Length: 364
Image 1 (cartoon, one colour):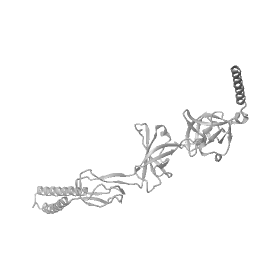
Image 2 (cartoon, rainbow, N blue to C red):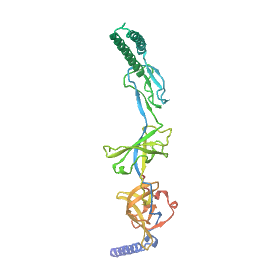
Image 3 (tube, rainbow, N blue to C red):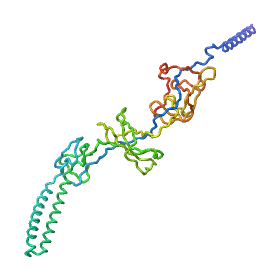
Image 4 (spheres, one colour):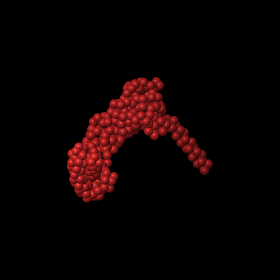
């Protein structure tokens, strides 16, 4: 009886194995065929893209200075506020000059007396009533008095601090009654009406740069706004990084632009040649390099081939392909996330794809 039970169980196991093998070999036709991936396509074509040299620059006022005290003294009067617009020669700070003014008054009187004495002696010289030596001494006394008066007047002028040019004052760093030592900062002063941008480019660009060349720049503090400038100076000596230093002056001014702001600078290359271009979204960055999925037709429907490419300049939504593609190649511009070599595809409008399907290369 036990022997019959064992034989029965073995028979059931054999039948179950045969059934499973049969079902595994009976895969439905729709599962055997690989599903087509929907993608959007574009054509690689020759066109002229504006080529630019890019750099990062710094805005600089045409004139800027830290106003300081030339001589020491106590602040007697303040004539400006922080952020105030000032004119050239406008009085900013007056230091205490009571002692110097008293000396100036005394030396003025001394000079007046010396001039009168010199005049009287000169009138007596022709008749011989006064010796020539006396006339020479009177002249020397007059000149000495004039020099002393000039010296004390210069001290008073140095203690009367004025704006050296038209501009906007920065934050006032002094207070009434404060004692200033020589060199102490009072405020900054900058002329933001004529801003410049300083930047550097690689030495290989030197041959294509010239004065009056147009420059485009965007200030990080003002996203979305573009400003134009023109090159006014090219340094003939390379810096320590073997780069050419340049300076451009802005043609369009903006009230919120400030000296010291960072700017993204682009200098357009003067010579433009046609190049092979594709939409930026066709290029995908991978661990092996930049790739583009190119459409192939082997007679059994469309499929894609992964192609390594070398990119060049970019502008707006287009990017230059210097190696890897040919004019007329159909490339995938959306839907790459589901693709690999040989994947069959179905071309559809980009609007029909889910946003998450697009693989977009980050802009530099």
